[in-house]
Length: 162
Image 1 (cartoon, rainbow, N blue to C red):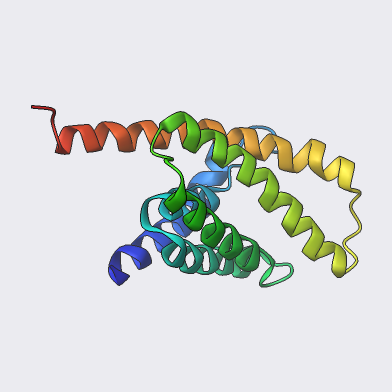
Image 2 (image 1 turned 135 degrees about the vertical axis):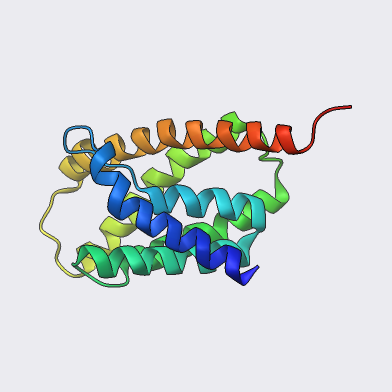
């Protein structure tokens, strides 16, 4: 289980560093580690989601510069919260997972903005939402939909209906 967690987090970090710039549309790049954390938290639970979120966010913070720990904290909180909610609700449907991904991308952006605002981050909230958080959330939703459908297809291939 530890090796799966490490490979997934490292893979998400590498994908974010290498694929995200290639997948950039205009000024919008997907948050691949967030997508990985959300899908892991839904499938593995709150502890796995929190550890994956913290590790993925910390890697993202260190690689991207800026305030180290902001993304680690927000992704860990979201991973844990989603793991708890996912255990209580039936979130196996791809539409629910993708919608949740978009909503949680927005929540993560707002949480990160709140943390950065404590340290006097100069960007106005409206501009940040309109030009960064909302476009990235929609892009995460499209990319997450492709990933969720690919995972559902792989699962169906592994466990064919009798």
